[in-house]
Image (cartoon, rainbow, N blue to C red; front, side, top):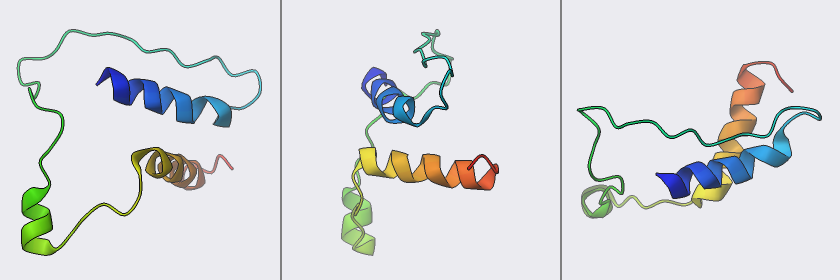
Length: 75
């Protein structure tokens, strides 16, 4: 999770408006129902559906940020 948080921070930071505070990573205790495995096995989706990711995570995060900004009218 820390790697994902760091990647999100890295992708978000250059897109922040001038003067916005830098993002920080906040550590919290896990909840009782917190999943123990964070990296899903996509073998079944690949086998049954012929699906595989076409966009790298870093690129997908950028696309998601752009989409959210558009939806929220922040462009």
